[in-house]
Picture (cartoon, rainbow, N blue to C red):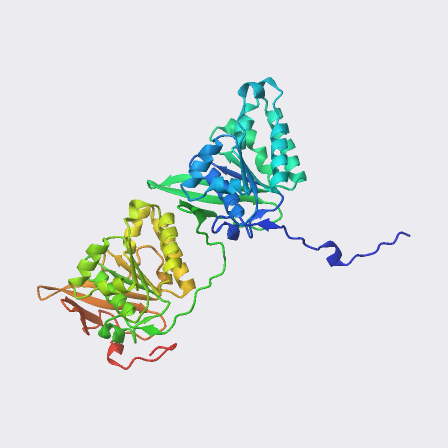
Length: 503
């Protein structure tokens, strides 16, 4: 009778994770769960303007700057063109070449030789092999491999040559990036489709126009033996190359609400039970002229006077116009600017897509390291593209601030005074910790401003409708009547209840 012997489970099911190399693209390592697969082939597919060449070159350049040599083979652009394009980003390729950290080879094809039959990729393999041994390089980029495939007359011959190349790359354990153009021609798509099956990792780059705004998206189509982010991720091409701004983590890492901090107005502090909560997201909503910017600037001046740093993002006024507008109401931003505690970023919303706005603002967030961020006004974010683009922009900015412990203060221009509507105008009110509504009222033929605290998470607050006046010396706030249907609670006249470290 035949007997069998059971093996320990860990002797059979013992995972061996892939070794990966950093991509050099900000945010992409997170999406790829570590980077490109070492010793394997990654396919980069994309249409014109998607950044395929830049994507691959950035990987080699940043690796070279860390002392790892690489080879760049181009079938389309000349080596001089590659060098000049890289110089616009501050990358000195000739210096890396002289140091033996980079080799650029323009594999110019002779059409007659390709069609007649004697041409093959063995010559290219020989050149790469020799240079790789001389430089000690195991990182390789082959840009526009589709150029070669188009030159071969027969599809079977093109497949044979590419398969031979792939086998040779695997045998020599090159970490390879192949770039291929996407094409709407179904015949060409069919011919090149086998490349996706051949590669171990396939990344698609897409350059599209949405609502007349240019935007770029990256998606990882496959990654053998590894987990990866499966969504589409926005990326931008900036002064330092390509960068992603992904939300790859499924876990929320927001910090809790902190101690109260003054709004800059004593009466409003009392109405809020001590002021805004640190790390909160505060929304000031109201029609044009109700005092949203003045109220935000009042908080800015108070925070900067405490030695805190504020990033003020304005989508509606230039720096001079903003300073002048609030100065007329007795709020002077100039001392905070001169002290370096206040940084103004003023841009037209339509000057770029929401992804680029977010990328640039997060860059400033990292370099300036503010305690508070003011966005005036989020209603202008619709002009960055679609309503979804505006929503994504604000959600990601709030998420980044809450993870860093930064207080957010948003203003929003609303068209309706109906408090039951979503006062954010973008559908993200669930992330807002405090909502202040400003509005106009006609009282005895006199147009007056009023303030109502609609929401203040984590603290008792006034339910009164407060009279608001904008004077030459700033904002004056006084308790008024209870709004229709509201409970007659007047916490602003009581001693604020201490919660969560508040004073």
